[in-house]
Length: 424
Image (cartoon, rainbow, N blue to C red; front, side, top):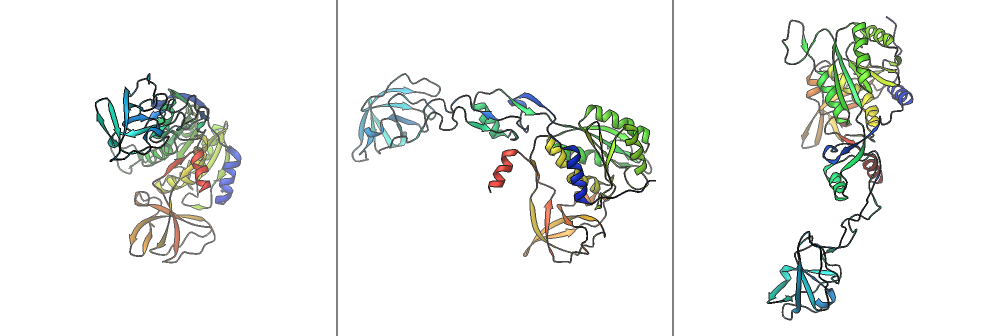
């Protein structure tokens, strides 16, 4: 077996960035109904004013503000009621001095009116409305384009379409929008011991964990996972499955069969595929046996099989590539300060990612290192986040304040979201 030349974490990240230079995989037009969570591919400029007419913001009476000056409970101003404009109706009546028109919230304001007197400040006597308090010009009136001006950039390329943003697009009369295509990511599990959930569990077999954790993590980056199946520890079968996966996807991820003793299987499969290996092992824990390759310009990530190793290497190496391909600025995760409940002795010569569980006490947050190993499922499900221990660190003592980066919640970051963060 050819020995690996391990690279540092920084060297690995730089090699991935230098090799792939990932960008969006394409653009498509979708209806607003299907656009939730998609990433805008171009700026959206308003084709109309919003609102397209002056509208009342309260139920009451449209007036000329100057006609109400001096009004009070003791000395109300009397205005002649000359009509009514309901919601969705055109204001066909014009307002003259000493006149008013009944309006509803959202009604079109009649010509000549410049304010609205709320109904609670009035009383009615026959065809006259008694105004008991004065209003000023513009009071409870929304002018044309007060919300959005025609030609204004409402949303920018790279923005993630949330319910509120879809509402803004609908207010412009748009029925569809151009968005980045979702990158398709093929996922292969490898290992003769793996059984899919729901199938009988024979002697020496275990249920596959990585298929669902990796596919779910892919969805969090607004990409489309494609589970391509489970390969035995056979280079020919693995190469064939990789080829099929790459023919249908933009990126391929294989978990398992990259550790010492099995790495030649992956190398042989990649060789049969005609792939070029970019990284063959990284000085990190977990994740040392990670292999990164390229075939026909598409990234291939061969991640370790242990659940925590697979998740950590996905977050560190794969997630940034997928985010760029999806048109995102990145993925956000909260970071918190906590004190170690026990010391951490890292593996010498490696950048360590140590999963921790958080608890809150009288003195604040405490981080409890989970040291069951990357093969234990509780290292994955019981962890709230992780602490990084840089290469060359001897140990972190109990009670040391550390930065914990949380696994969840996480959220995709759009371009304008990143700009807003930069502005503070």
